[in-house]
Structures are given as C-alpha cells and as structure tokens.
Image 1 (cartoon, rainbow, N blue to C red):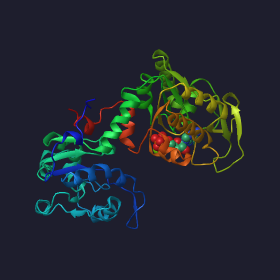
Image 2 (image 1 turned 180 degrees about the vertical axis):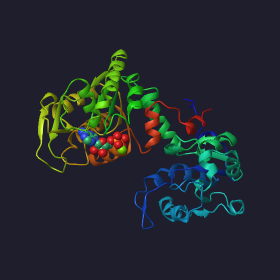
Image 3 (image 1 turned 90 degrees about the vertical axis):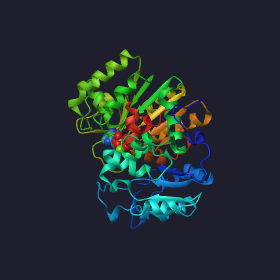
Image 4 (image 1 turned 90 degrees about the horizontal axis):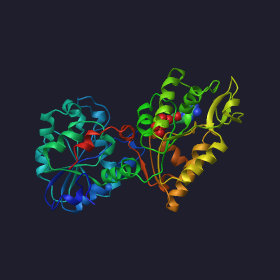
Length: 396
Ligand code: ADP
Ligand code: MG
C-alpha cells in the first residue's frame, strides 16, 4: 500500500550522500548523565539503516530552550558521547562554526550530531535563511521526530520544502499507528480520556465525540461531567465553571451516536496522601468532605467489557490519581485488560501522554500495547485532530 508520505524505502541509492536527519535528542540529564535514553534509542532504526546504506548521516536536533542564543549549557556536545554508546558506533560532534568543512571530511557510513538547532533564532521562526543554511549541508532530509512535528520550525518543517523529504522509521511507525487508531480505524472504537482537568483536553474531547463509538471519561475531569449531570462531587477536583461545556460535549456525543461512559462507582478519601482511609461508593453517595480519586471496581469491570467488544482503543490520561496508592487500581486494571485483549489479537491499542506512559509502565503493560507514543504535545495535538506541520510537509 502506498503511504501518504515517502519513507526510507523511497530514497533510492544514498551511498555517499549527505542526509540531514531530524531527531529528538532532547533527553533529560542530571550531572552530565542521561537519565532516560528512550529518545536516543528511538533514533536507532533510522540512523543505523542510513549509515549502513552508506549515507553520511547528519543528525539535527534541538536541546533545551536556548532561545536563539549560543549557550554552552545546552550544547548537544554533551549528548554526543551517551548517544554514541546507545548507537554502539562512533559519533562525531559538529559545531556550527566550520560545519561545512567538517561535513566535507565525512566518509560514507559516518554519523555526526550537529550543534543545537535552537542556537539560531531563525530555527523557531522557520526563517528561510536558517533553512537555507541547514539545507547547504545536506542532499536529503529525513524527519524522524514526530514529537517535534507539531512545530513549524526550520529543522522540522522548512527543510522538507527545500530538500527531497522522507519520514524516518520512527516517524513512519508513529504515523502508521495513529492512522490505525484514529485516521482509519476498525470499529467499534473506544477512547479513554482521563487526567486532571477538562480544560486541558477540551479540544481532544470535541474531536473524539465525532470519531469514536465509546468515550470513556475518567480522572479528575470526570468530576466536571458528573457535576454537569447534577452529582454532588464534594471536595473533588472539579471545574465548576466548565459544567456547561461538559454538557455541550455530552450533547454532541449523543448527536454523533457516541456512548459516553462516566464512572458510576468511585473511590473516595477525605485526605489526598498515600494509603489514606478510603471508601468505595456510588457517585451519588460522595460526602461533602470527600474527594473522588479513582474510578470504582464495578465501573472498571464494565469498562473492560466495553473494550472486549471494541476493535480499536486510543488512550490518553489516567483514570485516577495513579501516582498515589491505592488510586492507581482502576488505571492499572483497565490497562491490563487492554493489554491482554491486544495480545489476544482482538484490539488495536494506542496510548500516549506523559502521565499515561508512566501509568502504563507502572502497570507493566506498555510493551503489550500495539503502540505507545512518547510524543507528548504532538500526540495531544494529533488527538485534537490538528494537522501537524512537520507531518503535513512530508506528505506526497
Ligand atoms: P497525560 O500526561 O497522560 O496527558 P494528564 O497530565 O492529563 O495526563 O493527567 C494526569 C494527572 O491527572 C495525574 O497527575 C493524575 O494524578 C491526575 N488525576 C487523575 N485522576 C485524578 C483525580 N480523580 N483527582 C485528581 N487528580 C487526578
Ligand atoms: Mg501530564
């Protein structure tokens, strides 16, 4: 099947060619050490394939927020050594001063990391001069950084317009998974939307009601929907000023034949701390001094049955305050059900969001989902139905 974007398969012979590869090397660091190398590992497929095909691989990336100024504390020189360890190959660091000479000396199969793209103000402005300066260094452009694709920057969007442009393997896998989950999914489709607040996910909810068959609302935001339905949520996190918006979303779901699932039993406590005394009650029995901190066991069981009848699941946001025990129970339980159905082959499951990924790791099931996106902002914008400039620029 022809994909809507070109991939490394469409590049032809790249031996001896200079390939600018946009990756996400924005890794967390402490005391000069990378504390989580997930993003570095995600580049492996593309970078090693191109090097093995004889390309001169030039990795382009940003690091931190230097705001258009050179800043030694945000130099990608620091990341180059740990990156070489992850790749298991030599990687050279190329500063912007003398970059043309350094690139001219590279041999086929060599890999280099260019200095932080955000040292130039023109990067975030997508300035044509900055684009041209980057483009001088390459014959081809590969964008492998889905997580940066919601930004129209010189290295994420501008370059795709001036050089032959292709999606890298990680970008390709991400776009394929998102297409299966929401672009062109098998129905019935369920969406789980949780997290703290409705206000941060309004656009997600509005987009999803028109696309999915079941909308499962959990987390703190469910309280706003419950309040909209006249439930007294006590001292729960609740955006009372948004109950009207919540009602409008429920109406839109009705009109679109989307079934909304709100919790009907919940776990409550009077104090928000690890392992406080809790009660499991019907939503209509929450006392004035209690907070809803997790979905209850009966609702979770019913939600598991919904997933059993679905072919596709997209998940963003935990069902409860999962960082604080025991309010991780609903999230962990439903995640395990989704993982088991995925492994049995009846469900395509795609999840994303910083806390969601942490919760799936806590449940020990991240590897059992079809795809888990670590893209954060880009994943959310995709859930909102927005066109991502970095992706749009790659389309055929
Ligand atoms: P993601 O990062 O996956 O997009 P969010 O940031 O939207 O997810 O939401 C995660 C946060 O929501 C977590 O910190 C979690 O504790 C919080 N949360 C979930 N349910 C509740 C609740 N009932 N009350 C308060 N906070 C909650
Ligand atoms: Mg979050």
